[in-house]
Image (cartoon, rainbow, N blue to C red):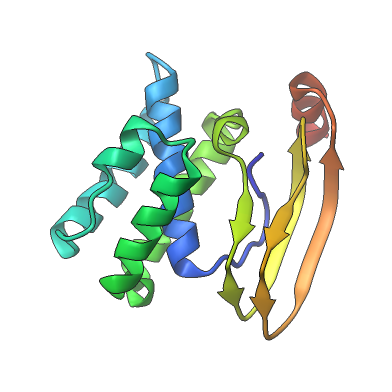
Length: 164
C-alpha cells in the first residue's frame, strides 16, 4: 500500500519509508523502470554524501523489516536530516516514481506509522489487500485528513480502482 495524493509525513519517516520502498522495488524486479532506479540512486547519493553516519545497507538487505527502517529513522534523526529540504524532496520524488511505475512495491513494505509526531497527516487513495492505514502512538498538532481508503481488496482490484 502506498499513500497517494497530498501527504504530510514527518520528514524522517518519509525518508526512511521512501528508502525502504526504493530498496524493495529494486530488489524485487530484475527490470526496474529507469526513473525509479534513478530517483532511488539520487536519494541514496544525497544521503551518503551529506550524512555518512546514516547507513542503509542493512535496510537494503531486508526492506520489509520495520526494525531496520526504525534503525534508519534513528540515524536520520540523530543526524538532523529532517531539516534537509533537498533530501525530503528527493524522498518525495522517489515515492512519486514508485507510485507511477511500481505501485505494487508498497505491498511488500506497507505503511505502518508508529511513534510519529507531525503537524498534519494527509493520506489519500490508499488501496490495500490487508489493513488500509495503521497509526500507533501518533501525535498531531494540526489536521488529520484520510480519504478514499479501500482495505481488504485484491491487488488486481486495487490497481483497477487506482486507474478510475
